Length: 290
Image 1 (spheres, helix red, strand yellow):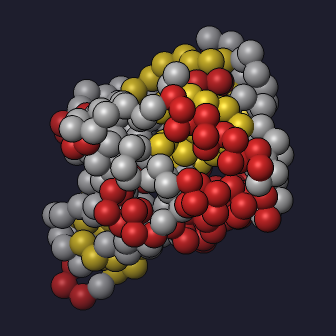
Image 2 (spheres, rainbow, N blue to C red):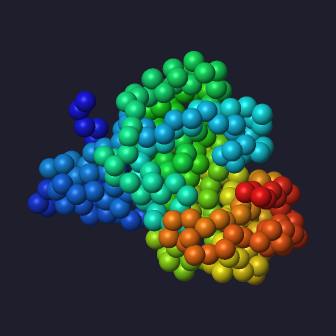
């Protein structure tokens, strides 16, 4: 199959390119990839090495995304390709999110085949999930467009680290999203994930303005982002930005990947965070991984 040329990049001198998909703005030499590992410079052309090559397929309940207020009781076809533009030290899917395309087995599925598979199994929608779907945005865009044409809805499960132009191109085809709001501290974002908080907040607001149904997940990690003052600031920001009716999922951390030395989140910490959220005006606050 011919290589698929990415959108959102510019060519530089000497066959170098600069990716414009996310705020990393990776400058990529010929033969190399960006931080996400899935977008490679091939002689001055940025190509997606995962287009039509999902590494994971499953049928999930929509609540697993987690989405509790979007078609509850239904299923979705979950699909993922390798790669992520974050390097979270606690990643539970690091075997595929932190892998190069050739390091994981994959299927060959064109967008029309994904839609046909979804309809064959009578799933009303497709979820782009498990890794960071925005790193294979071209594949999502083509698949999601066909999904809408066939009466299916599209779910995005994302960390939200993307530039506004590609996000705006994608949002007309997205019906619901769960956004992983990792903390309300830029310092923690940089240390734990390798990104910036402001970009994620801008993504949330862009989705709100586009009419996408939003639910948010905050994984509480002991000693990292469990400060109740910070959690209160986060909840107040959500309330102040017309998101008080959108569910917030506080999720329990378990030792994973490069944070295997930390203990699981105490249940009382999650309950304390839930109470703080209610005090700040949030209406639907759930506890996950308990």
